[in-house]
Amino acid sequence: MSSDVVERLRGDLSALLAADVGALSDESIRSELRELLVASNQLHAAVAERVAAFDARALSHEDGFRTTAAWLRGFESVAATDLTWDLLVYDEQLPAAEELLRSFPSTRIVLEATGWPLDQSPDGYRGWEERLRSVAEHPQVTLKLQGLALIFGPTRSRVEPWVRTALSIFGARRCMFASHFPVDRLLWSWDEMLAVLEAVCDELPQGDRYEFFSGCARREYRIPS
Image 1 (tube, one colour):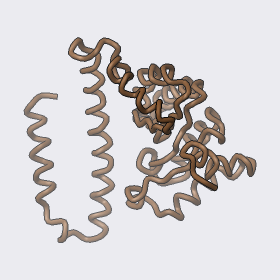
Image 2 (image 1 turned 180 degrees about the horizontal axis):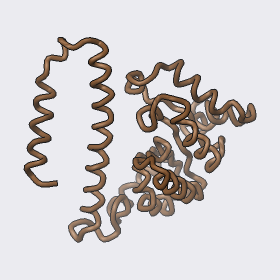
Image 3 (image 1 turned 180 degrees about the vertical axis):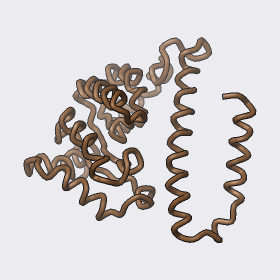
Image 4 (image 1 turned 90 degrees about the vertical axis):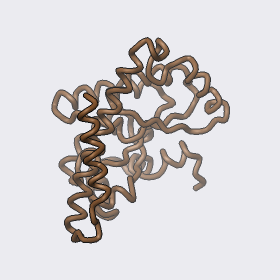
């Protein structure tokens, strides 16, 4: 990205912040918030792409993103406390993150946002599934399925294929339900979110439903019953 494009982006953001939000109707605010969430997701993807490119250069340690010797030494302090650690990366970054998973096989690690697939085309879906299967081979990793409306859209038809595949890969015992509130409230209500996920999980045995909606999270975060 050239510097003039960055400057235009900064100018647009300044104008956005200076806008009189109080003059907008409720529906206008909701519409703008939805668009801003999409734009924010795209901006995060652009930043992640540039971080990955930077890490691949000689300016960073030779072993790359989240696998530098110094970073791994720092992570040892997390592992020593026996805490649960949440990992939030985009699905295309999962292969690089696997060095961390291999280095700390006894540390509880929760992969957030269903592995956050940015490319939701058929090819993107297949790539995400392949990378998720590789991560699932590390038994200390569980999967958190939050932010579904933000990532996929607030409907059963958009959410179901990804959730069902994730459950089939990790198993219900290693998958946990989570919301993304208050951000999710811009896209669906709590009742709407719960209704969609209950419908998606309707065919699961009762024990698997318990694991997904409660059991996995209680174990990983040591929440008392």
